[in-house]
Structures are given as C-alpha cells and as structure tokens.
Image (cartoon, rainbow, N blue to C red):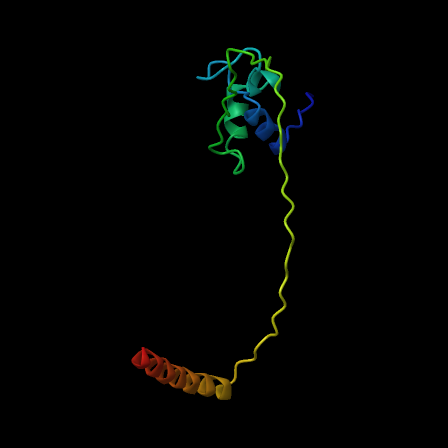
Length: 124
C-alpha cells in the first residue's frame, strides 16, 4: 500500500504566493522556483482534484518580480532633520446639555442678537 502525501491548503497558497506554478508547462513557470505538481509528485488528475478545493479554486501563481540591476548608494550626504518644538495647548470646554428650554432660549437669543446687529448697522 502506498502512503498518501499530506498537503495543506496553507502550504499550496504559500507556494502560489512564492511563484510556484501548477505544472512545469504553465505560462509563468520558473525552473528555479519549480511547480506544485513536481514538488508534491502529483499526477494530472491529483492536481486537478487539488485545485477543486473551495479555498484553492481559481487561485493563480503570484508573479515574482525581480530587477535586472542592484542599486548601490555611493553618496555620503548628511541628512539634516530640524525638529521644531511645539507647545501643546489643551482647552477644556464644559459640555452643554441640550434641552428644549435651551433650544427655545437660543432661538430667542438669535432673534435678539439679530435685532441688535441691525440696530448697530443702522447706526454706522
């Protein structure tokens, strides 16, 4: 009897994230990274069944992007950072509880203030 290989969903997802393709004939196959079929020694049928799992269905290989150069920083410049101290000012304001009496009183104040403002404007 052959022993079955234990494969985890998280392991397959990690392989896809790291650039493993499903097969060696897949579009973005990279021989240095490999493919899931070879890594787990799966048949085509096994691979098909593996990717029918709800958490693996439709998942694609993430392209591993590399640059064709290595950037070397050969400039030794001093970076000057100026820090300006700012004094924090906190002003405490007492909370106002709004009641029907406050609202009516405020409406009267607005009317009175408007009348006063009109009287002041007329005096200019």
